[in-house]
Length: 426
Image (cartoon, rainbow, N blue to C red; front, side):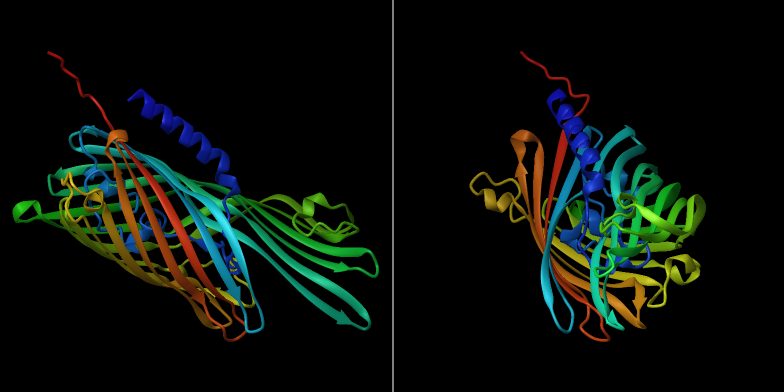
């Protein structure tokens, strides 16, 4: 037990130290709050993100906090995940390849009493990482314009699940949102050795909340049909903003704070502002045959139309209602065989279609992907290594928009530690 607890501490330290370095190289992160993640896509990408109705023994499912009751009474669970992505980003004239590597999430789960289960974790909410350069010339004066954005919005959560009956549970997550989002616009005039630069920095620190319910219909031979529902109310998130606009001689387009501004046009620090995270809900169901197969589907929707976020919009984009349809299927050929390790492995497949929360130049930005993965049991270590791949496409090549073709490699470690087990010797 102590060896695995030391692993927990080490992994927590790695996650906390690396969280601020996580990034996703997408030009679509220029809009709104950047790339926004659904909980299912973070935790169960191999199932296509279909997780609000997923209830499997000894799996932490923070997408629906009512599902924490699946944690075994003798288990202490640790989940740690990371993702590597390769993207081809193309417009109508050109394309290029980007790579990124991210720590995805960190979570632990445990039973408090027979009817009370809990989870604690750290997950991403959104990511901003883009760099766009344009060249122009007017009246014989050439200039280069750079748009640069970076930063992350993350959340630490404390989740609770309470069993009303053996087949019905409710739960909630209390979340602390934190992070920094930066935007910089720089116009360089090489002939004059001067530039104009404008920069925003948002420091976000506030609390959020979501809740869920899970019902299980028990069937013959331990089969079950699980139905789950989650709800997140409209939430106003406070932040402070720094702003600077002026002219100077520095050429660092990444961060306005690293340049000397000689002529300040506008400036403020720690201005209190807010944005709204929308009212959201999710409905899902899963059919489970223990140690054999699982099928799951989900529908997620976020009502951005009602959130009134004019300060997050611009002339090219508006925020609109988003939705996601996802499904997944897994099977184990023969979990207790001693003759073939491959038959003890879990094989997973999934797919999703998502209308994202931004409309750009009047066009919906859609995202879709298929996925596959394997779960490798490592019984001596009391853990499972999950490896999955996701192949997808976002955006389109029309109306001066950008298309992303991507491949993601997802790796997740699940540790299971036995608590309160007294060994006996003859």
